[in-house]
Length: 409
Image (cartoon, rainbow, N blue to C red; front, top):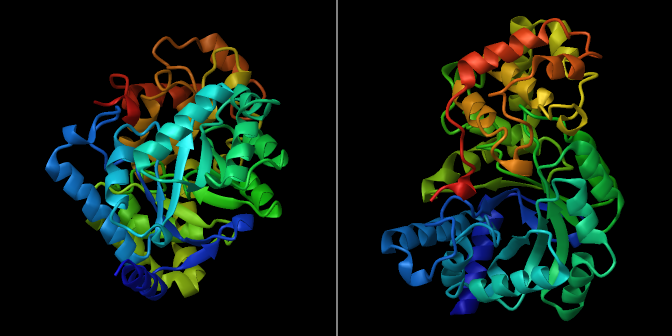
């Protein structure tokens, strides 16, 4: 019976879901993956007995719906609270060959890294995982910690030999130069990173990963790609005849270097629009390119062509300026708010600055030092306009400090 279930799942996957070779792992990866950071009950470790039945039933329904649709890559992390233990309960009823499992462990001392991973295996109820990521190589010290002799990299190699992991990679919220450095080490089989229509800065990293035949996994395209589950009216209009979620999926998948997009579902129906976008999969550019041109033109018309083409040039990274202000991210938000009325997304990202550590880097503007800003933008040809833009953001986006999802109760 278990074998029959596996065959049924395989047939459904072939019928509904598109796959791409996940780089040198040789895994046939569905173009959509199931992210495990939005369906759990708590952001803290809790016993399974403390999870309300309705919450666990919802998670089970999400997983089974995903498998029915062919989304057989399930992605979670030790840091996602009750995600692993809840998912582990569902996996007991599903044949192991029917899914690809990825979890993540933050960089730490070798012993702590090993113990944390072993806890993941125990919590998930598995003997091995297909993919293990170093979770959050966001700063140079995270990469150094991971790769130093005797560090987590040696643990990863040993676990590979033992058969407890099949392939190793890393996830990152870091800047592009750090991601490129991690890719060049050749130590990783795949990576999880950010890339969307509204944030294309990591394209050089994706190209570099492709040259090394690494798998490329895009983090949270619906949420970090612009809170597209509640788009502004202007964005919705410009994306017609697609929903902004569908457009962004197709924009990402128009690049063969990208293999899968993570969908952090909170309910089974959250997959529907994404799967619907695959109607255009065989002819992506025909439907996607006119929309992209409209979105680009809207920004040119609103912001000016000179700004649209050059705004990011000669600006320092957040760690390179004296006040640690994330000027590039601030101006990206300015562009989105002015062009597409993406106020909710702007507030969400702006108010994380200064409160989300290296996961959303950059100092808060609550105690803005104007002299530090002027020094940071002194090489930009827009140095006279930028202070007004930052004042606009402070006026229109500032609210009480936001919390990362993992800090929520």
